[in-house]
Length: 225
Image 1: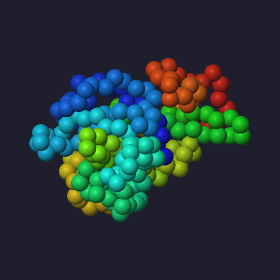
Image 2: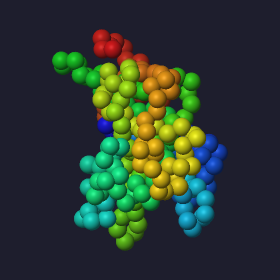
Image 3: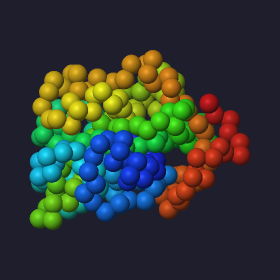
């Protein structure tokens, strides 16, 4: 799963990168995004007839949910079942989005030791996670989920799942709606994932109240990996 990630680029940078029009209040950078946090997403808006840079609550809330608390259990959607899941299928078909990120966190346990790792492109380039969104309740609260897929290569040593990452040439088809699920949900080839490095980082990231670039610093000592 993907339960924490970092997204620190400015509204201007994201607007330029995704060729999207900002339509929500700008969010500050976050090095420790946690479930139910507000996050930037890129989606297609019919009212603007363009890509928009919007804000969504991380944690998908289906229309039949009684309240927003349901979202904390639906931060991820499995790529293998998203097209047929009663909760996600409609949004997969009609309401897909891109979730900008710098990298994501996972934890590996060895006995009593639990080490946090940060996965990020070695060259600092941005990532776009595949996402789906929906609007819940009378106030049309926008919520989203990040799609996950089976981890490959060295990434599988940390966790068996990883975010579904979309390269730039797949953004238009993903945002358009419809399309062939098999092609839309295809994971990146292993050769393209080799540019993602795995860094052991400070344990502070385990506390959602902690934030800041210091969370990406290496730990004083790590015997894992």
